[in-house]
Image 1 (cartoon, rainbow over the protein chains, first blue to last red):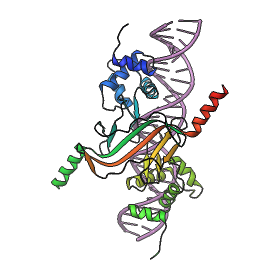
Image 2 (image 1 turned 120 degrees about the horizontal axis):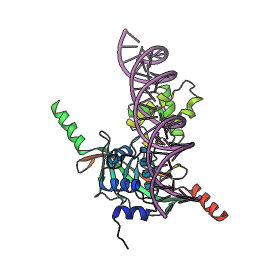
Image 3 (image 1 turned 180 degrees about the vertical axis):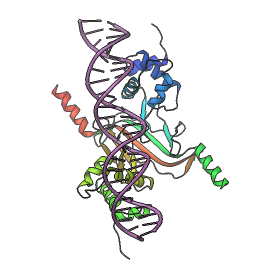
Image 4 (image 1 turned 90 degrees about the vertical axis):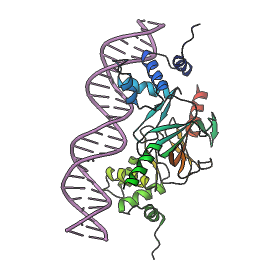
Length: 147
Length: 147
DNA sequence: ATGGGTGCAAAGGATTTGCAACATT
DNA sequence: AATGTTGCAAATCCTTTGCACCCAT
């Protein structure tokens, strides 16, 4: 029995049939934990797979999210992005530069699968923090001192 | 000293200059706690204010959110909506029908203003649950039993 | 008269759709 | 052959922008 790698395993386990494109996209997410947008993923894979189309990236990312092989993040209006890390963790988004940062040390909401509240079946939890990231905070401070 | 109502107070307190349109939109949010989209708000006010334009609704809702007179909610991809309730509470979104439900009884993340993590200044926290709402769960159950 | 607020029409982007070509079993 | 996957082009939808008009101070 051949031992396939992590990326392949993730697809199989999630019930997503592997293909060259799907493998590449899943792999991209896992090797680029920067919460890329659809377009980032597309741009990042264009060299490897010159025939790749945006449509496929859209479809595949949606597919991965539906199968819980990735997480769709929609903190920011008009800035959907994806996270290959499906372990519970908190996201921080900077209101100024739009950057998204993982906060692993924060107590992430424990995924309590299929807990029900008022009949509503909970399958996922996401905790977002919003504010000013370290870089932007430093910049603002510098500007204030300059003035 | 005249005593103005809640809607008016909210605008003033938030530093938003009242106007007929702004008052109507703020009022709509407070009287329709259903997390309306921009378009819902627009449709809902067209009768009252026939000259109202979508642009104004967009601008005003953004303005209200910026002044913390309302909350912008972007759980769903491409489905931005607004909540006039600015008290901390948890949102539940149904993956099937897209409905958003308030969960007041859940422990909402306590807003810890200006706490800093790794230099990132936290100004807001939002906790989302995603899953299947009571209605959709019931429907699914019925369908299974039918088959 | 001046500054902010509003509304129209047009522009801009992101995402989806329909469909034909292709790959894989 | 059959089924599922991909990719192009076009369509669609949401949101923003530029600008002129209007209202209130």
